[in-house]
Length: 335
Image (cartoon, rainbow, N blue to C red; front, side, top):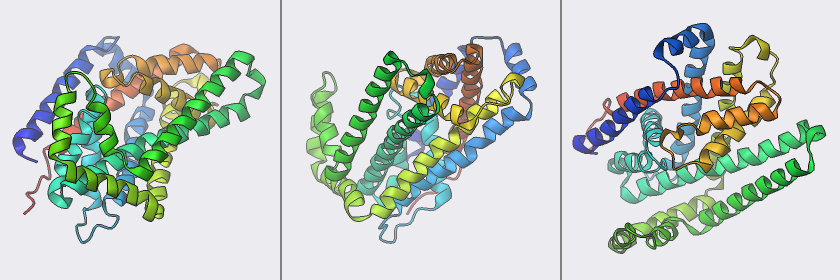
């Protein structure tokens, strides 16, 4: 990727950081007091994301280097692009408007445009696919743990959410079997304003798109061990990420006995709520609202949910800054 394009991505991230700093619902003095009162648990939240991002990077790494034909990409380079890509996803509407194009452009000099595009699309699919499995797992966990509080309207909600997860898993499996790139471009080609450009792009790059789809289908059909290892690593990252909720609630003395399973339910509800509002840049307000709603349902103080969202926002801000910094270091020129 050229330095000029990389600087454009960097500028987008810097603008987003400024916006995030200006949109906190409390003064900086109050924020600092909350950080000090949190003590080492705040830094536990920050550092927890090192193993989470390592699991994410490992999931993408096995996809990139599956049948790499001698074009191996090192783990730490994949880790760097993973963190920077997520930083851009945090700060752009719909997420993929930032992180995925950046990853493709950074990876192309190492493995070629078709392999870079297919691996990024496959990993993005795997990341979302793992969410559906995580939500399905959480629904089962809720039923097992809170059977006594399930009323008829809660049952209807659970049935609707189960149907949503099943439908999502079904369509993703179709995409893995038959490829997704050409279908996605045909879909966006019907949209107003951008449709004409998408169709022109698809016609110009039809051969590359076919190779991308064949590589997507090949991973599921012929490299099942890689497919399921990547899925497991992403699912594991979702579960490990639930420790963040536990660490944050440990900042509050009255919640020292909260179970890890409750934290899984809180994280699942928050991520589902945030993803339903995917069009909002930086998920502003959606995370806090999701946490507040689920803590109320679990008979916890809703203020705790708001605190959880606030600390999570600070963690995001920290790792966005780290991701932007990584964009500017270790960029060797590929011959």
